[in-house]
Amino acid sequence: MLARSDTDRPDEPRLTYADVVGRLENPFVGFGPVVYWVARLDDEVVGLAIVYFLEEESSHIGLTEVVVHPRVRRRGIGTAILKAVVPELRARGRRVVETWQITKGSDGERWARELNFRPVHTVLTQVLVIPGTDRALWQDDAPAGYRLQRWEGVVPADLIASFAAARNAMHDAPSGELGYQEPEWTPDRVRAREAELRQNNIELRAVVAVHEDTGEVAGLTELELHPHRPFWGFQRDTAVSAPHRGHGLGRCIKAHLIRWLLADRPDLDRIYTTTGAGNEHMIRVNHQLGCTTVRIMIAVNRDLAELESDLGVR
Ligand SMILES: CC(C)(COP(=O)(O)OP(=O)(O)OC[C@H]1O[C@@H](n2cnc3c(N)ncnc32)[C@H](O)[C@@H]1OP(=O)(O)O)[C@@H](O)C(=O)NCCC(=O)NCCS
Image: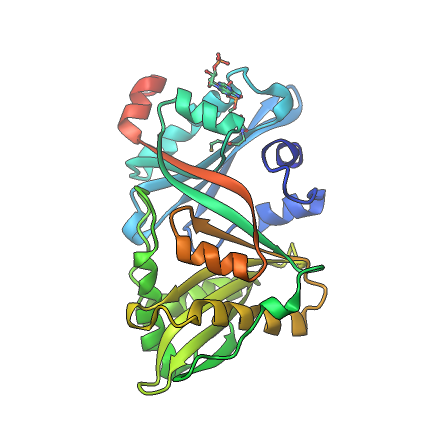
C-alpha cells in the first residue's frame, strides 16, 4: 500500500507504515462488512483486494478495490486476485462489482478498461491544506433567517427528524450511473450510524443551519476524524435542502466547521473531500474555502455474471 501511494496517488503526503496499518484496522464505516484478500509471491505480499459488502439499498454491490505492488504489475496478479474475489461476491448475493477509487490516467484505469468495466461516475478529490490558507476565506456569519448549531457525535433529539430529512437532499447530488444508492435517511438510521462511528472511535462533527421560522434543519455538513490519521479530517456529506438553496448556507456551514475544528485541533494539517465532477455548486464552494483539486477519480462497475463469464470462473 505504501508503494502504491507513490504511484497512484502522488498528490498525497507520503504515508507511513502506521498510517497503512491504521486504515486496515479502521476500515471506513457505513459501507458494510469488509473482507480482505492478499496475493503472495514467494514470501512477500504483492497485492490485495479490499471488498466492502454494501448493505440495504446497495446490497447488490461488492465495492471492490484491487491493488498490486507497482514492481510486479502486468504479470496477471491483479486479474488473478479478482478471480479469487468473484466467488465470494456470488456467495454473498452480489450482482454488480463496483469500484470508486481509480485515479484517472493510472494503471488502474487501463486495467479496468481491459476488463470491460464501465465508467459510471467521475469524482474530484479536493484538499484544504490548512497551513498557509487565508483564514478570511472561512466567513461563517449565518444568512438572515438562519442560525448555526453544532455538535459532536449525536444529533440533538429535537433536530433529528429534520436532520434526517435534510440529509436526504444528498439524493440530489449528481452520482452518474453508480450502482450505489444513497441511503434513505431516517432517524433510526442516523442513530445507527452514530453508534457505528462511536464503536470505531471515529469522532464525528456536524454543523447545521437551522431555519428560524420553522426550527428545522435546512442544511448540514459532517466531518470525521479517524484515530489513525489524527492530522487529517475527512469531510463527509454536505447537503442543503431544496427550498433553502442559493443563500450561501453551504459555504457558511462548512466555514464554521473548519473554524470550530481548528479552534480545538490547531495542528490539523488538511481536510479531504470528494465531490462529483458535475457538482458545480459544491466544487465552487470548496474552491471559495481554499480547497484545491488534487486528483480525478473514476468509478467503474460491471455486471457480476458477465465478469464471471469473461474470467472463466463460472
Ligand atoms: C489495477 C491493478 C490492480 C492491475 O494489476 P496488474 O497485476 O498489473 O494487472 P494484470 O497484470 O492482471 O493486467 C491484466 C491486463 O490488464 C491490462 N492492463 C493492466 N495494467 C495496464 C496498464 N498499466 N496499461 C495498459 N494495460 C494494462 C493489460 O491488458 C493486462 O494484460 P497484459 O499485461 O497481458 O497486456 C494495478 O495496476 C494497481 O494496483 N493499480 C492501483 C489500484 C487500482 O487502481 N485498482 C483498480 C481497480 S480496484
